[in-house]
Image (cartoon, rainbow, N blue to C red; front, side, top):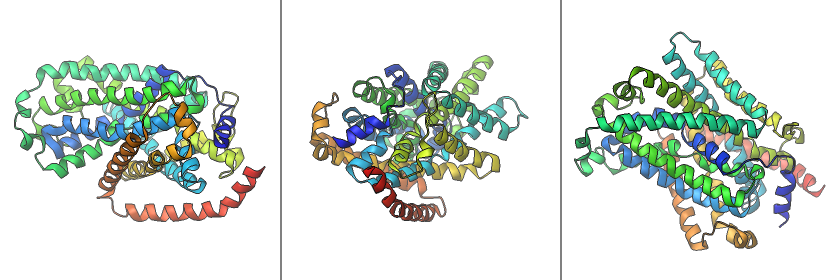
Length: 445
């Protein structure tokens, strides 16, 4: 198809260096981040002893859209995968609208940097928080500037240490769990009712999600048809199982009223000897956030790179360095992450807005699951990851409903959130219609 040829041409300057191991490292690192460190206690306050089950439900909510995107990524691997799916199967203007929402969602880069600084300052009181946050943001930016393979190597190191820290939390914590806390049936698992339980599970989709963004790296994979779906599914399932055990320890070691609303630090203090406690804070807390930050830089530029080639943005913005990295776009996202850090903006509000926008923009590529069999049957026939049309339609419906509910719950208590979304969307739509004529000229050339 013409679009397939376009995707191939647009990614020729990028190096195909990522194998299954690299993708697993990026995927796990993207999933395990500030979510598990910050949201576990909040979920305990909502769901009590049902928190481990809420992690499993959250993973199911995440796996459904991941399966849809894995089908798309295996059939039509492309740099900026999710953008190209929206562009090709829904329409070019909708594709650019999706990208604009993606850019807004990357305010979470600042959240990752500041969360890292919180843990660092807790370990070494007196450190300049702003400088530490800006420093880790800059380090991950530079590693990605040096090349995606360099970023992947850093990611693999971070993920190994991170997985060890999380594993130790489970190993040292399980023997100290009071299992009677889980023996009260439905009342114990859903102390505030089913709706509150689902609210907690919806919050945890941020903690269990992330592997879907591997589809952005199709143009840099050695064997995307085989490795992309495996990496997306394996990394999500592996982390979900780990999270469920972490939830058991978080709920079962200390009284629920002690850990509700808190990070994992009080439980870590209760189960670890001092040296391992420090290792957990560094390897679990700080590295979790750093790995997510690094992985986000790895994928977030890919859709905009394709959009620059098509004329939606100035072509110069998509310049590729000698190391094969889109350096101008990396700088743009670096600035987006740096501004909230350096200006001292209310990071909790910025983070909630960023996460809510993320839940909304991913609805567009998921929706293409309804269309790909009709619009690209040849690619589906050749795909190495086989899912029938009926099964794909069901998965797409479940995924869309789950993410819509999660977005509503995420925005529910932020004053003016929907108004800001509407205002931003109107500006993007106006720009899209004004720029469309230039895009058509570019496509003709």
